[in-house]
Image (cartoon, rainbow, N blue to C red; front, side, top):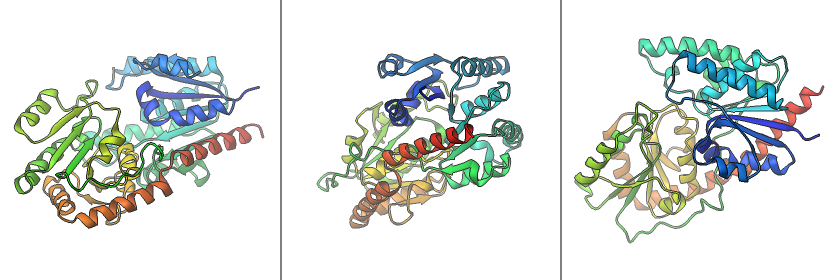
Length: 381
């Protein structure tokens, strides 16, 4: 009989962006693959690839206790219906809710919990954050108490925090730096040194991604280097209360601070036509995919000394890090790389080497298949 794997994730576009190569590989290996999430316009695309699809009513912005309990019950029903040999949950809410649902199912299902960043609550110092941390810690303890499990971390900070919270043994966890990049698609092309410097930021346009800091740094840099072009790629996330608003973006464009490209599917070309990739995030990142892709394209990176972000660079060799929420330091780092062309070019070359060593998607896929095989073998002992 075929082994079956159930992927549970919040929304289909995230799955396509971050986990599709893994799912395609296990499908080709003969697994029966089910994806359970909230579906958007990408449903038919996934269906045509041969996946079994089941809707789960995830609310990314929070829908109240009744709504969240309904989601946990829906996951329980999916598990009972599919009877997976492995359940792989991805991102915070699917991991917590799948772990809780498994506690109510009379089956010892091998559980893969992919932690793509812990969010702000484990690092913020406000009273509300501390209360949320206490509640979240209790949920993690229960959700990750399965006998057969592997918790995948993307950075050592998250690993340290959650290993303490959930009392994880070394055999319960593995470190895989991000979701990888296809190095044949995100390939290295030399910088165009005949153009004015181009600095690009690509992300979901949330305040925590450092969009405001990017804009303020752009103002500072352009005062000294007025020909520098700042590109902003992405769209507002209307389901997130902390989204940047379209009206703000329009104002920045009218002010001449940025060129706004919106949603784009040609990120490799955009990066290859740029000189520096910037992500001043203070979000609860795993390892940002955009920084992995920037390294693969051989571009120097300027990001923050934030867990996950700092794991995507070798400081001083492939890029620079600055304190979070510090527009002045961000502008100084960007200006330094504008001025030091040879340093920037050398960083780009080293970034590509780093990507080949640490971020090849084929290596990431193989590590996941090894996790599945190990859990399946243990489940049959």
